[in-house]
Image 1 (cartoon, rainbow, N blue to C red):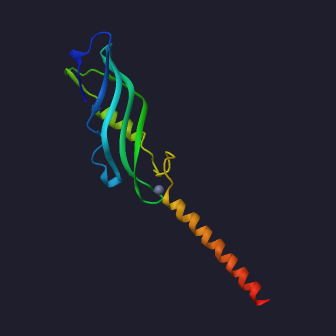
Image 2 (cartoon, protein in one colour):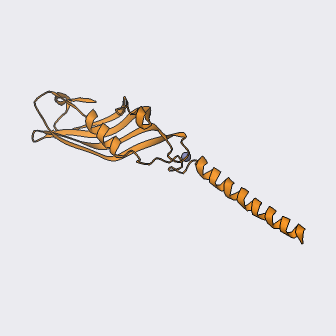
Image 3 (spheres, helix red, strand yellow):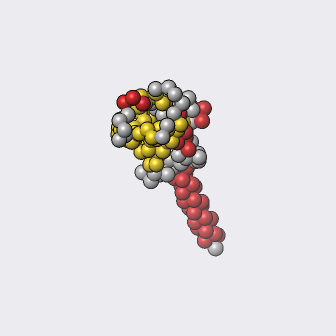
Amino acid sequence: MKVHLKQIPPEGLHLEGDEDCPIEGLEDEDVRCAGPLSYKIDIGVSGGALWANGSLHQSVELRCVSCLEKFVHEIQVREFAVHTELQGPETVDLTPFMREDLLLNLPGHPRCDRDGDRVCRAKEIETAEQNTKREADWTALDRLKLKR
Ligand SMILES: [Zn+2]
């Protein structure tokens, strides 16, 4: 996302919208863009530097470390903040800053039930196994009774 310095008035500028997902190319790490990046930021220029702050939202498809199923997670960066010295050119690219903040907020060990809107299948299997075991115990007990 390139910002033209000439378009920024002295009082700053509010920007809101969608951009291409800035964290493409991470398929090997099971991170896939699942939509555009949406941003709400305020930017301004002061003292030879560009500042920006606001929030970012990016939907990504991740793979659950527990059941290995894919699920969609929304990365939320609530306090996106940039302060960068102006190097002379008339445009500043905010994409690398956005990319970095999104990656920092990516869950390290993603679990599909982390947002609470679904039950991880690995957990379901675990519970099912426990139930089967319990039934087996009862069968053993029944057999014991029969012998008497
Ligand atoms: Zn899972």
